[in-house]
Length: 126
Image (tube, rainbow, N blue to C red; front, side):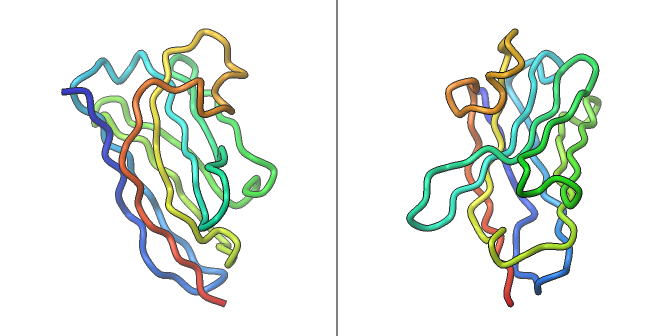
């Protein structure tokens, strides 16, 4: 079965760090770009970051640029999101997703992804 599983969320104080993991099964992980999205209460799900399948090129939303780092380990079928200098506004449910689109700009949109994992909750206290 095609599946993604996100993990690593938790409670952290402002200025602290967390590392999220996204592990894939049931598909050829190396052929897919991976994105991270987040959704806070009462808000739309928004794009956070992505990493391409071939050259591992990365992209970040302006709100997290310089604080978050995405990486992937194809041998383990896992993508990571290292989150540093966390702010209360980072509080949300975080989701990972997989895409085989050939249009890289689509990786910034929910519609560009084919497979979604369940969310992991991140809470940043002030």
